[in-house]
Image 1 (cartoon, rainbow, N blue to C red):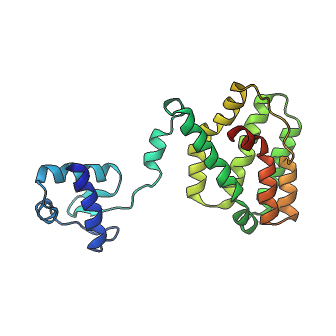
Image 2 (cartoon, one colour; image 1 turned 30 degrees about the vertical axis):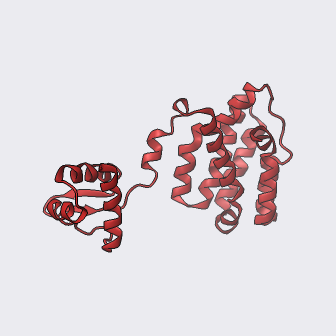
Image 3 (spheres, rainbow, N blue to C red; image 1 turned 180 degrees about the vertical axis):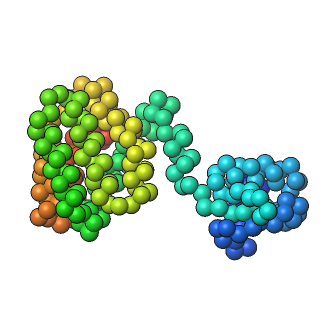
Length: 216
């Protein structure tokens, strides 16, 4: 019944045209409108409050709030508590995201970003261990997300970062050591300087070719 009441509440807010910041009706009115008991309604409201969809304010009562859309996901993205199949699917999300970055990169990249990417390439050239190269790989790809200037995708990438280790762990598990990609980080930077979104998308596909082979 609580599940149904929670769904009914969402529909009620939409159908009645409530907007973010609006004060909601009293519990008695909501319970009557939904045809549920006050106890069931309170449980449903509690769930919505935990999701950040409503809040109780002094002298205003219960108001409709804008939820943090990534908050719930951030709480459960613990790789050790997820199955290999789920980790694989989330790793695929990483590939999908980066394949689609091109359009945004070309319209938003600045000289400051190019300098940052060049600094990373310089660090890679002098890296003394595999661990350093892995860290620099993370730094390079994180910078691509940063260039988009989109706070949602930047935060999503940071949340998925522990999942990205899945590719490395899976490669080790099936005894396939990493090979140099056909398209390197240097190549990607050169394409960002001289190419276009379509060229970058194809270059990124080749950069991730081994990952695609592992996931197939």
